[in-house]
Length: 273
Image (tube, rainbow, N blue to C red):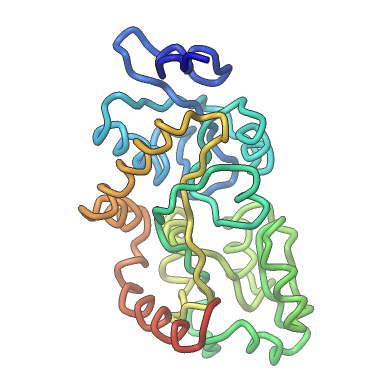
């Protein structure tokens, strides 16, 4: 059977189309409640900057998305079924590795950090230390955070995951309705700045865990396009563009670069994580 040229193969896919200029457009969705990944309906943020940088490296690839935010689970489901082509900025899981194609280029390191009220003497260097807090010292998480299960395994029970957004948790923290707020960086410093709470909230210096976030593609995206996207991401990684994008949206990233290197060194000595 004669293989169709790539151009015609793309026309047969429901979620891809080729504009008149010859570029292939891949579709994604603006993820809801995604902090600095998608800002102002996708007009800015880490993900729009990464996707535009890919297009600059390979002008034959373009990306499109609507302004309406979509819950993360739905974004992944739509990519799995081929309704969209790209999901930006998610951590690897065995399930996602089965559902999607994940180019082996890390967009940014997602580090877990803790925030407390300014002047609070509490210092936390490990998640297990939260178990030592008295029952009245609540640990704040955003609704649906995967960290809830991990804290339960560690014996940390005084968890409040009722807040719908990081801003809600920062308000709870300032009002004394929680002792510690756990969130990720990039993200924490941005949320604090957006809430104008720089003088009321302190982010502790310790990195509590690290996850890598990736660009993920529908399995309906042709392998040739996957190779081109991977090549563009590799070039963006090597020339420092991916780091610079994350750093622009995360003032805390530069301050924590040395700490992250120390965390990686310690984790390497301890074995696989």
